[in-house]
Image (cartoon, rainbow, N blue to C red; front, side, top):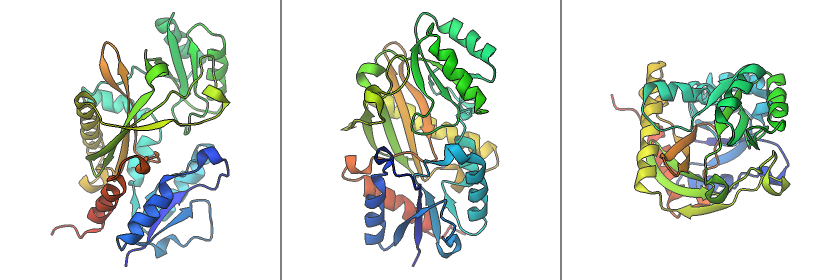
Amino acid sequence: MTQIALVSHGLTDPALRDDDLPLLVDGLTQAGLPAQVALWTDPSVRWEDFGLVVLRSPWDYPDAAPEFLAWLDRVASVVRVLNAPALVRWNIDKTYLREIAAASTVPLVPTTFCTTLGEVVTALAVLRPGRVVIKPSVSAGSQNTGLFEAGDPSVLLLARQILALGKVVMVQPAIDGVQERGERALLYFNGRFSHAISKGPLLAVGGGLLGGTYVETIHSINAEPAERAVGDALIAAAVTVLLGRGLSESDAVPLYARIDIVDDPVLGPLVLEAELFEPSLFLGSAPDAVGNFVAAVRERLAPEPV
């Protein structure tokens, strides 16, 4: 009987609780696939005892990215890991968006990647007098992310902070309507659409989070046809890029994916990012979501046709 490890973190912040984990443990176990939560930082875990390791919420990795990637390599040498380590290494840095843009016509939120403060200043000049979003290309949970007026001096303070951490600064125009409508997230398992949710706005203008804490306001929605088309196109583009990087067809198709979309009043749905590593899946928001995930895992465990 295949034992499955669901990889998470050891942080105690209630805002970082992974509500998907108990649903996954119950759903997989009831389907005859015993599952348990394991911390990637726990040295006592014998990863080779599992038949499959599923990365779910190792949300403490940004502060220890080299250690996490070294751990990932060690574990992948003794057991299958999903999403695939090569996919994770590609997706962990949001510069992957440049490859998506080069390989497809998927509509993306315009993004400038900056490695110096001078590049940030130039990018901001293009976007004045509107609002901008500043964030690092490697992060989780909106860490070091801010929404500002383009001329706000605080923009450069945050950019300096990100650069001092050795990270690349992303500069994006703030999409009109996000502060009122938030984002939409489309969930895919094995490349198939499962369900969709809306997320209320998180960022306060001038930096920081609305209300001062990271709180997601989630509602189940029916994805619009235009949003589905963009989500489907992004999945296809990601697979194309990953196949070109030498991944097998099985590894190039993510077991799970969350495509975050914002609706521009002029351009329509735009992809903000493709979360293929450790996204919340909001499994409690749709009655079929857990079953869809379990079915996807079963497919990955089935013997490959000869």
